[in-house]
Image (cartoon, rainbow, N blue to C red; front, side):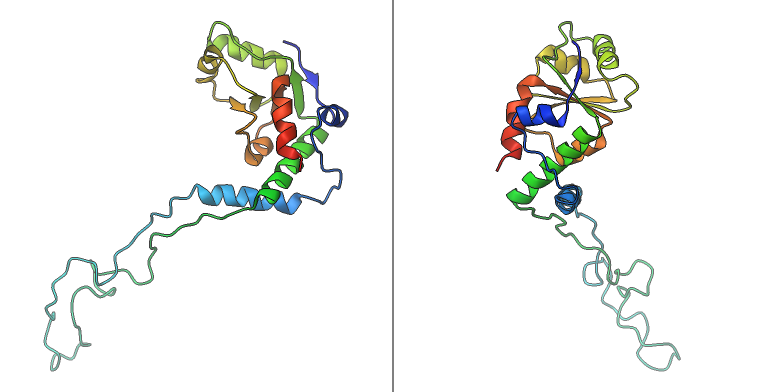
Length: 205
């Protein structure tokens, strides 16, 4: 397999919509990445209020005559083992981004990586023997010195997926599933030619 540098002219030939305006789409990329990271948060942090802790309702000492501040129970936040005042409660951090913004962000991210020269194409990508060693050798030949490699194709054989499973610095992803964050994160992006049609449909209006 030989890799060819994927240029803006190649993208236009493949009917992939690029963002030629340098400023257009930058805010969309920011919104999508923030939303993706927010949507991964579980929001499960939780503390008990004074009404939820296991504590007796008995007054710790009498109301008057002790010289101390009056206390109604041991569940107060000022007591050890008491409830937490203004602590975290379960919440939903998810953000919604409309379809047009997601499409614009995807086009902008792909355009910027193409302009950087970080995208190459191959006619096909398959590891017949399913071995990680063969996969590593292939990646080294296609993207030499790249720390992180993303291979985008329409689909991959079971042997290829098996070979890539234990290779930490490279990832296989289908053209339907690749997202903005992945396009920006990986040092080198390898596009299999059968993925270009899907990418074109994801960038066109």
